Length: 287
Image (cartoon, rainbow, N blue to C red; front, side):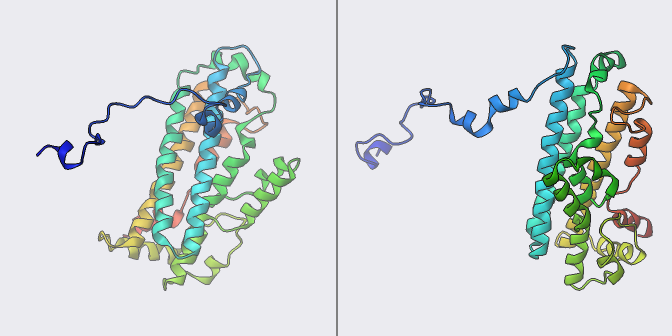
């Protein structure tokens, strides 16, 4: 008996021919409404007519969007940890690793930028500098890389300044991880849990040993081991981004001072040397 006879005289979905895409809309396309393509295009506003500047500007804007996405993922991970939802936290952290890899890949669109090409529009940037990116500061603060000085440039934007100040004084992702571990019976010292949040956390022998103990049991069902590895992936990829930033600056402008008044390459090198999740790295030494 044929399929048509089994299902009556009406044509089955298998019999239906290919459908055509919708091409008539009363207003702008739903895609335009959702993505905002025209708004994005309007944000590409070079200040010179140098052909290299649009690439520099667009890549910078793309990086800002990746920073926003990273912030969302890590703040979600914090909320999940506070709710004792470890699976949800690890899922957000793992997604962020893929975002970081895409952020790192963004440098590839600037590898062709020579000093001569960069100098073709650099002076017209005035005092504008990546040092002033407040979304990047949120990313750093969430990773525990705290510094009050980088909040000051944003005083003229009260909402942004207040948001950064809250992030400076609040717990980092690492702080929420340690609080989670403490609630679940692991011996996190009180001085670590109650420390000043505005300064970076340095490796603590007891926390280092705590992670070493977790890593001594790498069985597939060890959820804390999976958490540690996800955090290590974040630290590694973020470090890669900072190192690639140093290389990109060295390649395009050498050791010149930064447009925002920083020491440029020297400042970036010092920043790139700061360690994310220090106890996770120290634990590997004691294993």
